[in-house]
Image (cartoon, rainbow, N blue to C red; front, top):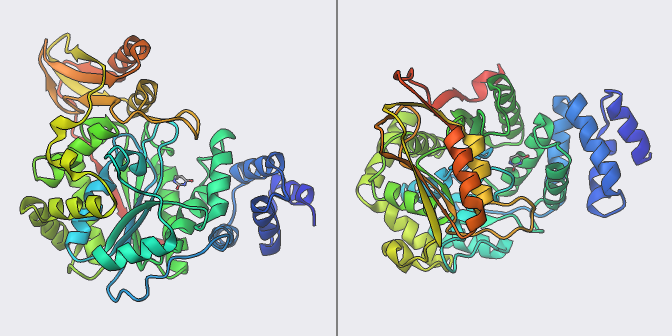
Length: 439
Ligand code: URA
């Protein structure tokens, strides 16, 4: 067997055997297969796809490239949530403490921002001292101690995904259903969870822009989860417009604080509550998803979720002084406001443009090793569906990169679609799927 032959077979649309998949992935992880052959292999998968047997095996080969977290000593259900990535998507930071406050174990391995999408870890690391680099032992110990941990992927966990994702990112092979499935599900299966709630983002600011592709991804992820013993449900949620009113890192933490203190309403809160409710339902802490949502509303309103967030931040080494007194946090050197030119209604804010604008300001990465500026970001004073009045502020940009101000200002101005008439209502939560969709 050679890499050349296996690439040829996938290029020609053939089904790969288990041993061929193992040969390619394990060979790449151990440096026997070079990047140029792995790139060709990934592109062949991108164009010709994989059937369920192949992609499920690919997921398991990824999974077995590293160790797994064993949480079997924790007697209640362990449930995680995963988003396919978006702009202003800060849901995990609110949801993890909220669901943990309801008594569910939440082992959460999150990702970093790349391209126009932000990453939970970068946002959390804008809190001075917050640690996300955990060994499996440290992760397990924290789970036993406070029932929740928000950490990053290490070389111990699914090294195959870490290495292959970096290559996909620069070879235009990210938006492939088998590759996304193996990447997400291998990491989730390695966490030792019983249940998983997926937030599949769809729209201009998501990896998948078409609802049909997002639905296919939902079916595939659910099928792999269920086949591997993890009860899996999925929501398709809108990512045409940024989620919530902030995009960046520290600025998103500020919005999370407001939400955890019960001061936020709208899509961010609605999506968070729905996903959290589903987690409580999978954990058998609520009789239905709606009952879970109602429980979570109370935990947001009575301060329990906020208190749990403070606990997580202190245990993970973060300085809660900044959460309690955000005014102490350093400020960006430059800021610029945009004011509405006319009365009207916002019909849309292009999430892709906003994500790219945030990267230009310094809030995201163009390359894996780029440094993130925690104070760079965008505050949206209004979002889709809101009325605008001439002279009222629509957005403010914050940056330490003076040279980026004018370009970003123009980009954002063009990203906002203001018209005279009121737009039709749109759905933030588009559709729900569970294993019944496989029947
Ligand atoms: N998120 C992941 O973890 N992997 C992908 O391939 C896409 C989104």
